[in-house]
Length: 254
Image 1 (cartoon, rainbow, N blue to C red):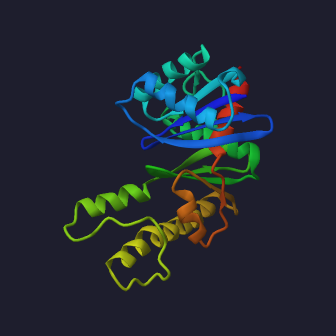
Image 2: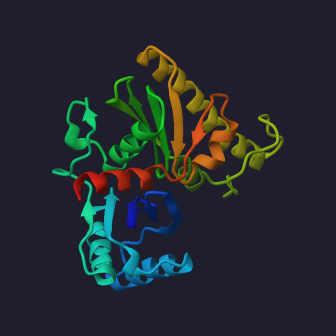
């Protein structure tokens, strides 16, 4: 059993994975102020809630876009398991053929998503990861990572708009009943949820045009379940994609 951790700008996703699949997934806030002991307590609590002990963990692997937190989490894992985690980065075997200008610039989360996507879904493939930023990755019919798209995250865009305007309120993140809003809150919900869904639909069309054929489209990330049901394109929502990718990469290196 492998303990898998994805450290994002807003949230940390943790879970355990074995040959049968993902056993649990939990989210906690990314907090630069927390100590290794505080993170160790949170991680141990997440395992205990799901009936898993540290003795069952044979290894740990981390994907991170927040380097300062990576080292703290790694020390927390060492407290719990007695061993340092494998961290996805330079020198780690992934098997991914990256065709962008500078492969070293590709975020570890996108690498891990791609490894899992290629293993689980028909190619060509478009992977949407919706978190602090919304990213789209394009993978061709033979498994090459061609490149992608980076878009301001739905929540980030909404929070920015509210903070920079005097009369727009903070709203709950849910879809309106109709696209044409009858009041300020309905209009904001339409723009943030339905507008984001329409943006994804349009970008999928553009990426498929450049790929030269229809693609399997997979979405992951904390925001994906709120947006993808309102897309007109066929999109598979896979909340555990990244954790499954971490498990595959762990087995390639250990």
